[in-house]
Amino acid sequence: GNSVTQMEGPVTLSEEAFLTINCTYTATGYPSLFWYVQYPGEGLQLLLKATKADDKGSNKGFEATYRKETTSFHLEKGSVQVSDSAVYFCALRDPGSGGYQKVTFGTGTKLQVIP
Amino acid sequence: DTGVSQDPRHKITKRGQNVTFRCDPISEHNRLYWYRQTLGQGPEFLTYFQNEAQLEKSRLLSDRFSAERPKGSFSTLEIQRTEQGDSAMYLCASSLSGGGNTEAFFGQGTRLTVV
Image 1 (cartoon, rainbow over the protein chains, first blue to last red):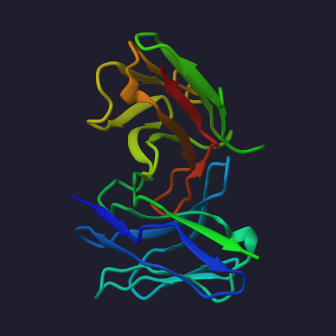
Image 2 (cartoon, one colour):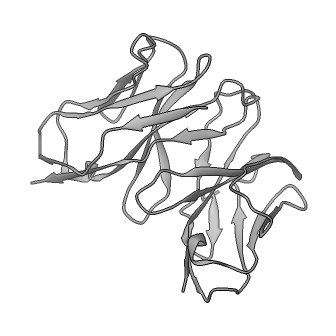
């Protein structure tokens, strides 16, 4: 079946540090890949997505590139801010799911940014 | 439209009691999803509706769980004879149809605690 593996947290960084959160996946075919963010007390928000190999998703300074050869979708940001503190989920959508959003999520990585 | 809304936000119940949660999707969205998120884990797919039709149910959805979307608008998720293992965050999401690239928007969730 499909699965997503992401690095365990918490990840603690100082403000303006470089962020990488690793994510690898297992899926048949060509899934769409996503990063979701969950701020404290809030629901999940889509941060960025990529739908085919070599696509780069980007939003709010975050980037991730769909690497089919390494089955990876690592999240990066060049300079984190305290407001980026949240839990980040890597996820994939099964290409065989008939077009609807049945999504498989990783376990989440908590990011703490300290001033 | 204020997005996907879930009610209640928090529910504490005694083991063996029945509980019902409500989800109001974004008004023009015809697809609705329920997910369950336990502590330290990513959300897990439970079930999916297209309009009023329930098109897929996960094996996680035991016979104590039932979901409805009677008029293709709001949905309810009922858990009968609750068990401590049902304690989790129950997330609702909605999306438009039209292929796999339509984004699913999540509500803030209902946190259930079974004591």
